[in-house]
Length: 263
Image 1 (cartoon, one colour):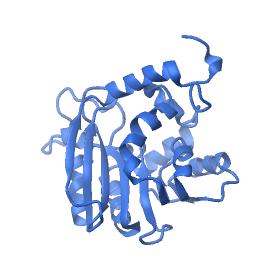
Image 2: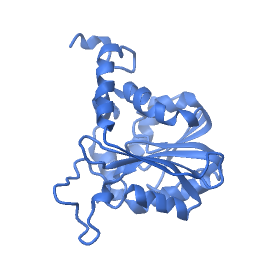
Image 3: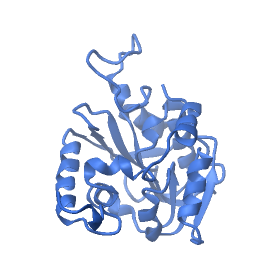
Image 4: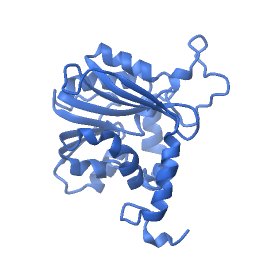
C-alpha cells in the first residue's frame, strides 16, 4: 500500500524522470496524442476556466496544456523535486503559482477559488485517507460551480473485504492504491457536500478495470446532481488507436519529432 512517504521517496528521490514524465504516454503515441485524443474530449465542457488547480503535476506533462486554458494555474505537489522542475520548465510565466504540500492538504488554496481541479496519472497511487482528504479540501476550495477531474484507483473493488487480499488471479501491476474504489469516492463525495457527476471505470495496461476517472462538483452547482457510471473495458484500445494516428500525423514539437525518421 503506497503511503505518502513512499510516494515522496519514489518520485522525489528515486525516479529519474527521463522524459519529464512523457514516458508514461508512450501507449498513446506521445503526450500530445494522449492529451488531445483522450483527456481533452473528456474535460472540454469545463475549460477554459479562470483558475485551474493541478494536483500532483510531476514535471509538467499536463501543465503545458492546462496553462493556456486559464488565467491562473495553481500547482500543488508533495515532491519538492517536481515543483522545482515545473518552476524551471515554466520560468517567466507569471500566471502560475507553485506549492509543496504535505501530500493531502490544500491549505494554500483559498476557499471557493478553483473553477477546475485536475489530476491525472498521479492520485492512482494514493490510498483512501489521502484521496478522501483531497475531496474534503475540494469541497472547500471549489467555486460554487467548480468541477474536479480526478483519476484514481479502482483496484479496491477487487479486494476481498474478509482477507484484504486481491481476488485470485488479480495482480496489482501498476502500483494502484488497494483501499480506493469508485464506490469509495462516491461515498466520500456524499459525505462532503460533493456530487460525482460521472465515473468512467477503465482498464489500464490490461483487461482489469483498475482505474476510475471521477468528475465531481459541489452540491447545488449548475452541473446537476446525477451520477452516471460507465464501465469502459476499451480504454486501452483507445490508446492503441491514438498511437496509430500519432505514428502517421503527429510531427509537432510536442510529438515524436521528425528526427526519428520512418518506421
